[in-house]
Image (cartoon, rainbow, N blue to C red; front, side):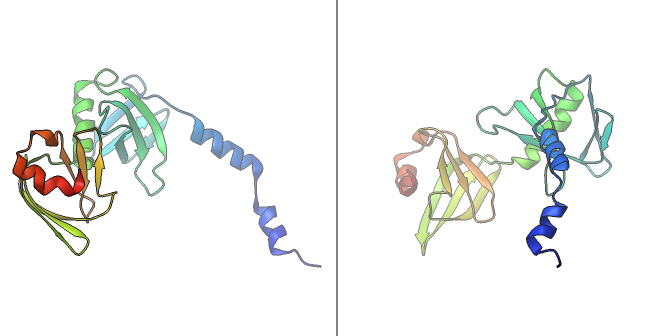
Length: 189
């Protein structure tokens, strides 16, 4: 009698391999100037040599991008799995100035978030809000869905707005806006 589908799948299961992979995933490695060498690649990315391994390209991710942007910097493999290679506890202390600048450049590209300085207009039409604003990067028009995930309250007066394309905009303190601007923003407060 032949194997059933369940038995065949069970034979392919390797508990020892799974335990090794789990242990590897749970191991936290701290990266610093003694054990990690970051270099800028010809393509403008960052490579890493650490713990005897070379990574042609790494992803630099803030664990707390809005509340603690200089601590707990996760360095990850730059593929769809984004497996963590290690963690930099404090980018100001754990790496040299050149490496810090290189990593900050990567994070600034990843976390580009213009600050909204003035609200010219907000129109609500058919479940979308059309923003016409001034930012620290210049004038901007964008569209958001009228749902709770498009505008997130980071604090009592700080907002993070994400448009239809995934671009982020920040209002550090909406209480500083004029009464006219606050009336336009009232839908989201």
